[in-house]
Image (cartoon, rainbow, N blue to C red; front, top):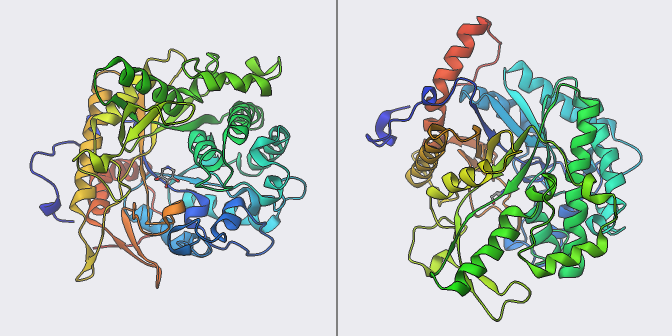
Length: 473
Ligand code: IFM
């Protein structure tokens, strides 16, 4: 690692954060594992969705993805070589329970046992997300998230995960970004399972919110020393103008994008700012108000950008519309998301205001830019600058005394970016999908150097060596 990639003005070090600040990388099962039909794995909604023509960029799919199923050892070794102390990954429900309920798969359980054990062998702490969007297709066929029975199915799945892995895994997250899998998957139809409209969205929201807390309660009972969180997507919302109409539109977008799932879990109910949300009442039972609540040990927030919002007569239900970043003459990533570092600070500040949020962890943050291999190396100055500038904002929040206690970069290796396929590369490590070769990008090298003091400190403390080592230049 040379200093060439670090701007001279960048003076942040891990010791500027508290000693117990958590650093890591995040991934998700469908995006990296591949092995989609191996052993007795069942079909998931993403396995099905990618096979529907026109759903995914160039008809790409996650059948092989990063082949993490077979390459987990070398990937975890690389993580270790990059001084990354915490690895957040999700479990595939249909790998563990092929039909979603009923019988479990021993091959699936064995796979995650191997991953967990290898992390621990390498001195890396595993952080598990129970559900990152890949519902078993068999459950979808019965209505999936729109069917209230999902609560029972989900509880069975959480119990299985906790009982098999809870002896070694102490850090758990129940759901990944429920707003995205309900919004994109059940309202817009652009993600699996491709359902559309309020009739799907509202019950999916309510059942996901109930599963969020139910999952937390099961983990609390099954893994008594677990640290339990859940994760939310969030973006700073800026009204396009100072007119009343735009400000009102921005408030509604904020309620939908940032508050919809956190507030019921804190006992505040669903945000009242959006009339149509009141229709959730139709799916509510008297006991739900208290069942929606769970005392999470931490809240994971996932921030990438901000949204500028304007009033719009033509947008059904919401009357609010996002002004595309590409129409605003700002720097954007390959996702057409604005690069706007103060957004992460604003989101930490926002979640910090909830009295009952005990700790906040950034469980995802990252960027997709065009990468190319030049003389065997991937130099990615834009991703590096993004990472550094966002980290500065996290540090600002920390300095101001907010309850922020960790940061996970999205993501370790380039992977399958859902409907966008493999085009947007978010990884700190480049993957050549033709031969599965990994190349640590400049941003990954920088993150690794940034984290090195933690690694040195940990090795000094432990005075113990594992037999695993992988070099990268
Ligand atoms: O790739 C996704 C991830 O699965 C969930 N959060 C946002 C990431 C980037 O779009």
